[in-house]
Image 1: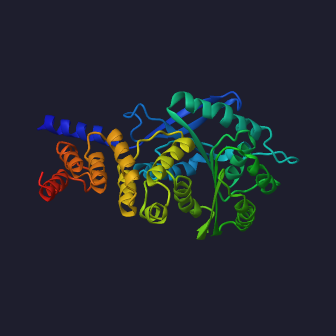
Image 2: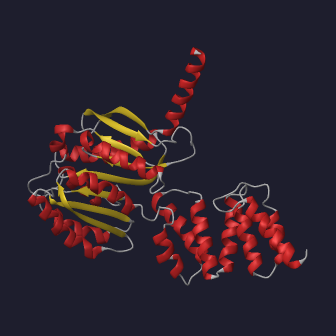
Image 3: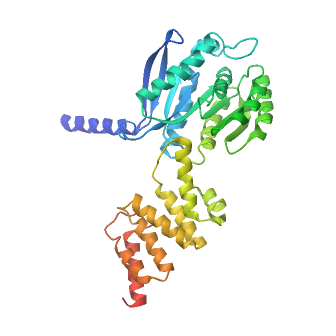
Amino acid sequence: MRKVFSLLFFALFVASSFSQSKIIYEEISSFKLEESRRLKIQLPRDYDVNIEKSYPIVVVLDANYLFEPVAGNVDYFGYWEDMPEAIVVGIMQGDSRYDDCSYDDTNFMPEEKGASFFEFVGLELIPYIDANYRTAKFTIAVGHDFTANFINYYLFKDPPLFNGYICLSPDLAPMMDERLPQRIPNIETKLFYYLSTGSDDIKDLMEISIDLDKSLSPLKSDNFAYYFDNFEGATHYSLVARAIPSAMEKIFSVYRPISKEEFNNKLMKMDTPIHQYLLDKYKTIEDLFGLTNPIRINDFIATATACEKKKQWESLREIATLAKKQYPDTVMGDYYLARYYEEMGEPKKAMRTYQGGFDKEEVDFITVDLMLEKADKIKEDFGY
């Protein structure tokens, strides 16, 4: 009995280790800072299993209190495929945040310890993470008040160090509200910028955020994806819990599986080929996030359904061909190809294609029984 219990416990332990994200503490020795800094790193759930996969990086300043809400949301959104699984890197700062974020009283750019910390992040931390972990070429920075201001300095690098900026109630340095609207239109790479405050935020900071929003909103373009939230009833600290999931949802909106809203408002209103929308969606994911993901089964079914409703039969054929290539062991590609043949007036080809899926894996509503029923119906109707 003891042996059986031990084996059961071991099995449960192994199972749980594969289903949870992993937290690692590391020390990084910094030449720029002339000291070591402690990092808190969360690796995705499948990091040790899926060794061919690369992951975006989310860098969290003020990790002493900001790491958990960010890491928890990254893990949650990644689990449901609403964003890519990502490596979360927290820089433990504590009281050093004030020196880390210091700037010159004249030009209001990082000085002394602030300048050293600026270089530490860009020249030491990011290269260290890239060298030691499997990273994709997409990085986000997260900061709150002082550190939210500080991450803006990386926008003045060419190209900017980060692809995405999550600024939670920033305590902006003087002139930053003028410099950002001047700098952003000159950035040629794709940039995501999220800004938030709350109605019960610190009054000065709330006003700073509202004024900055007025300057940044007109700058929206193909290269500049900008989002702003002013949460009713949120304080300087409670807004964090509402802003982080909102930021993740907005920044990674294109990554999410096709939703009912996307189906109704985009796919069903398209005059262009629907299969091209599917290809473009995943090309955008590759271009933005550096990820070459297989097309999700959900997205195959959504676009194929739209093709049927809009009678885009050539697009359906293209989707069926893609599905057969990416999921050859499932019935999905055969089903949609058979539907294409039916609509093209080729019932014998449709019947044989339905029959060809009898030994493959079922997907969603597409069962083997459904395939055989459709084949038998054609056989009965046409006397084959």
